[in-house]
Image (tube, rainbow, N blue to C red; front, side):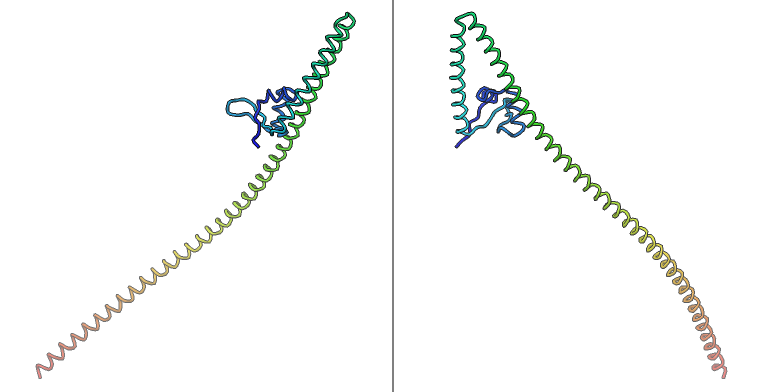
Length: 206
């Protein structure tokens, strides 16, 4: 069964409370409703709730008419007018008092809801701060590990540079040795060629 949507002002008249009280009850979640795109506050009621409110309003209207009739009868005499005026003033005071009590009740309810929301937000803030602290600690740990890795990398780079220098020195020494060996080989070859020519010359003379 579809809900009945009524303006908050109409609901206030049906329940005999102020519009501000109805809005506070909506904010507190006591009454289903809200402010829609047209800027008007509405209350959402089931069919049973709506019919019950309508019947209650009719009964209140009947009682009020009976009271008004009784007061009109009292006003027939001077003393009755005084009594009727006094009763009307008392009724107005009672109505204002009841409205004020409704207002205070809705405000207390709204306050309780807001306190609960604040507590939830505080808990969320504490959790967020805790998570942030854990992340900061994790970041510090990672920065520490990164510094250690960078230090280790620099040490390895220095070792590699030393190895490269050592290999370069050994390569230079090897090149020198090869040059010396080539010189020796060329010298030996020249000596052999010289001996061959000398032998050929001697052989020719003989």
